[in-house]
Structures are given as C-alpha cells and as structure tokens.
Image 1 (cartoon, rainbow over the protein chains, first blue to last red):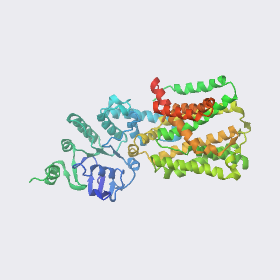
Image 2 (image 1 turned 120 degrees about the vertical axis):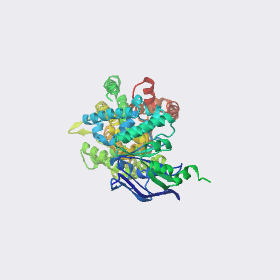
Image 3 (image 1 turned 90 degrees about the vertical axis):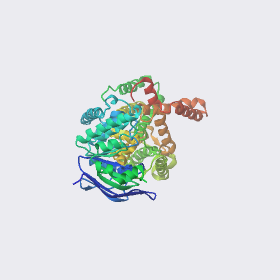
Image 4 (image 1 turned 180 degrees about the vertical axis):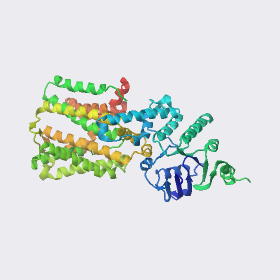
Length: 253
Length: 309
C-alpha cells in the first residue's frame, strides 16, 4: 500500500478551480516531485494535503487511514512534516528554539510541570536541545545554533525550515521549494541535503522549480498545470512527455 | 539553558530590603498595590506578550475573584480560602467556556470580544445589587486562614511579596518550558507551530484560563486586603490600566511586567502634586515612553545592560 494516496482532490477559491480532481500516490521511501508552471496549484496541493486548507472534495489517505481535512496539528502526530516556500520562521525565537519547536510532540508539554520546573521536563528538553543542535549541523547550520532567527540570512532560514521539520522525525516530509531564490551552488547543496534526508528513510514530497534538481533526485514526478494533473510518471518519462514540454515552453508551431 | 537566575535574586533582595526603607504604612500600601498589579500583569503578559493574543476584559476576572470573596464570605459565611478557590475556579471556567469562540477571532475583533466580556461582568456586578451592593460596592471581612488572620499593611506585604516572587519564578520556568516555547511560537508563526503539532486553539485557551485564574486570585486577595470592593475593580478602565502596564513594561518580558506595574502604580501617586494636571502628565509620559521606548521598559533596559529577559 502506498504511504500517501490522494484521490480526486479539489478546491476552489471564489470560483477559481485552484486544484481540480488531482489523484496520485506516493510509495514509502521515494522522492516524489510536484512540478508545474507558476500558479499551477502546487503549493495549494501541499496546503490541502497538510491540512492548511480543507478540500472541497476528494480524499487524502496516509498509510491507508483517511485524513482528509484533518487540522495540521493532528497530521503532525501521524508523521507529516512540511516546510514553507514563504518562510514561516518564528522570528521572536532563537534558531535552535525553532528547531526544538519541531520536536514539540516528543517532549512533555505539561503546563504545570513546566511552571514548577520539574526535572524530568528539563532533562527531556536538554536532550531535545542536543538533538536539535545535531540537526542544525546536519543541515549545515552549525554556526547559527545560538543565533536569533531574526538575524539569519535567507538561505540559512530555508535550511532552518528543513531542520525544524526534521526535528519532528516525520514519516513523510513535504518540502515547498527548498531551493527557491538560491544560486546554482546553493541549489546543489540543497539537492545533496534532500538526497541525504531521503536516504535516511524519510519519504520526501518536493515542490521545486529547479528542473535540474528535480530531474536529478526524483523517483517520480507529478506535473500540474492550471490545477489539473497533466501527467505523472518516472523522471525520464516525464521529461520527454510532449504535453509537459508544451506546458513549459509553449506548443511548437 | 541553565544559567544563574540573577534577576530573581535581585528581586528577592529588593523585596527583603524594602520594608527597612518604607517609612510608614502609606508606603507599604503602595508597595502592596504594586505587587498586586505586578502579579496580574505577569499573567496577562503571558497572554499578550508571549502568546500574542489580547484581553481587554481582564479586570472582569479580577472582579469575579474580588466579588466571589466578598459575596461568599459575607452572605453565605464561606471561609475566605474556599471563597477564593471558588472564585478562581469560576473565573477559570468562564474563561474556558468563552475561549473556543473568541479565539477564533483575531486582532481588533478579539479585542472587541474580550472588551465585551469585561463589560458584561461589570454590568452583572452592578445590577445584582442585593448581593453586591450595586455601584456602592460592599465591605469584605479580613482574610483569615485556618484561624490565622492577616492584618495590616506589613503582614500583607510579606504575603504579596511571596506570591510575586513565586509568580516571577513560575513565569520564567513556563516560558523556558516546552509549553512556553509553543506559546511563543504561536506568536512567531501560528501556521508553523500548527504543522509541528501545536494545537493553537488549545494553547491560547489554556493560557487565557491561566491568566484569568491568577487575576481572580489576586482579585480575592485584594478584596480582603482593602476590605471593600466596588464594581470599578471589574471596570473597563482597570482592564486598560493592566494592558498599559504590559505594554509600557514590555511585551514578552517578565521583569518588564513588574517594572510596568511598579511604575504605573507609582506614577499617579507621584503626580498628585500637579493638582488637576496629573491625567495630562500621565498621558504625556505614556505617549513619550511609547515613542522612545516602543519595546517597553524591560526589553529596552535589558538590551542596554546586555542581560537576558
């Protein structure tokens, strides 16, 4: 059974069919990419699957369990994690606190115990801090551990998003344009990082514009255009698909 | 991160030394009022400064505590401690009941809803005159705990100082705990905190209930301390005073809450010499402090002297 199964998912925004009857499934352990021209509905699709938006119709199944329209904090418990294209970093916190936030569900969140400084809570939090520092090193942010998030450069914040998502120890990780705004060298680094994450056994679903990166690391690719599924298949099939070439480059005369 | 809590030591030292410096009970009374406000403001700052929400009706919860103690001890001869607990439980229940609908709102709308809540509570207190004495208020018996009566400004001082010290310590712990981190994250990015598993609605409701609970307890103690309650305690202007203390002292700053409460309690007393112009001076000082210290006193001082929080 596929880890993620999406069937006939649709949503409209004021009459605009942003995502229309999209179906696909993602096997555990693969890197699955969603591509398409600007405004094709890629991020909207992510938002539907991760519970930010409620779909108008259609189903999302995670490991066979129906999770359509469940709020994000419940999906987090089921092993769903994601990053945001338009950075969602808590600028009022330090970098490592942002990563520790990712491990929220793995520690004791009890209010009273926290207020009274229970040593069990402190100890578990200290362990989480250590793990978070390791994760920051893993994504290449070792130098920023004690920095305030608000002083970090854009590129570092993109990586911080990934570290936070990883801290949740997800089964399936949705990366929304992790290399957006990066130069080719940085993109190659992110490419390597995503590969490293996938090799560690986490299923990765990726939205990305950088075609070289997508073709390099994806096992399968879903192509969206105007909210509809254009095609789906292995990277090398999709690359040659005339409909995809037409959508990106326009039809040959 | 473990670090020596110098701030708490300094606060404890000040609280211990203060009685030696205060010349008479009038000054003890002011110190007590500062402590009362500081404790309520600490709770309110968790909601406003850390969680990024707002309550313009917080005096309502203070009023619930004050009147629960006044009415239950006077008309029903409850022991003060039982009345205090009942008031706090009632305030917490009301907060928990209204939290789900009002925290669906944001910004100005949330402000309006909490404002309405405070007004409703103060109207109820005014209209239930047979129990509450209406706009004239009612007197409250002194606080006695298991036969031991707390009497006089000096004894009360030690009680309030103890609660203040505990509250500061508990707030600092809370903010450093996983719960507090989730709370701050809600302020930073609600959607990001949700996708890592923070149930935003529950966290907002919990901190709202907690701050209402503390406000109610302080309302009860204040009623016994002053010996008299009026509906003014639950009034809109009192809510605004509390929010002003949070903002002037510094949002998301524990010591800022204390500084804000101390200054804004002292200021009207200090300005009484201006005879009629005190409100003008008070307003001017508030405006100037917001223009030149927009982050509030606590964070500004912390940045200047390089200490944390």
